[in-house]
Length: 585
Image (cartoon, rainbow, N blue to C red):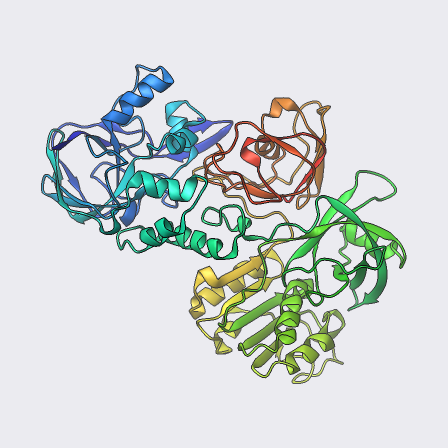
């Protein structure tokens, strides 16, 4: 019989790490005597980051003494004690390759159900003082697992662990961990896994994404990151395209049509995707900016529409210096913000020049003679700043199931209410709630960050599923640094100290180019030194949270990731530039 050898608890604490403060509950210590296990945790225990740990499906973390012996030998360490891996229960028995998702156990007076493997994150490495620990747990197939509390009760070290039910489908913890994190995702195993009622919703959603990916044949791992869902780029790096037309869409928005120099049709794109331009002003480093494609997917040319901003160097250059016949350096269409091909209603919400990607979606719907219900919701300052007003109305007329609502925040005297616009004022939660939008819709939002945050919350409050609300961001995306205590934000800047002598590293969304210094370690660490917003979790090439579009240039991996990212992407946590690179950060 398996035995509970140690009960370990610990409350979150602040830990200094790489010049930052991390809030974590990974430090656990054994306790004597009985402890009450409740629905969310054990008395005296807590989690520092409820986004990745804790909650009903991750109430208790289990790790095995046999794995302790393995790591003591592999890492050549003799200091490992119960709780060292952040677990609540250290157990004799219950190996990961035998315990199955959905198995139920009685310990003391409490009953538990196995819900998922351990979440891979950097904090176990922080506790172990072993930066590669997250990757090692996966590659050695020794993750440990979480329990849900079915019946609250008391437990104590030394008690036997009695199995009282077997999980359906008989999928072991090690098998399901490998299904998500290791290369190769066999369809039959995925189908078995998603049928298990006890599997936590997060893991079930990830494995369903992999099932959908198996149908498309796309590379990468969409179970770990949506970034892998973008189709591979049509060409590598930047390509010279010719400006064949220019047209003012409003007082401050200019469209440029781009074509291949030899007149051949350009590769098609998914409605909503963007291209990245590299322009060369007379002085200073090249300017790298991304712009949505605003015309019909499948057209022979690309059209971008650029707003002239008071302090926008690239927009000012494109407005004032570029002429028909000039060439521009353009990276292939990219991005995970694109129209879903399902049959649900569609809500397209935009403000200002944020109209560009959703206009491409409107084109795609009109070209397909779509029968989907389409809602077009747009906000502008007034008629003079309402880009594509006539173009969008013409497209909406082609869709029998379309509705539109235009809001002008400061309509001019010449703007006609009921003709040019419907509402005076900004788009708001109250307005969204009054439109009668369908609750089962897919929503696509593009505009200023504050607009998307407010309208996204409004749509959720109206009843839309948050997973079906998609946003497009042209500036730097929000950071995702689990457990790191937030400090005041700083604009991206060159790293401190003397400049490096290596290849140029460009952070496209942040508008920053700096020379590489090998002393920085990885591209992730360089980005952090520059205060470029980053997204990561494991920092060892496992979780793919840091997967980023590599717009141009080669990289070297060290260490090699557990599974390679999708074509055209890179994992910045374990890469270094082999030459000049441009990252979508």
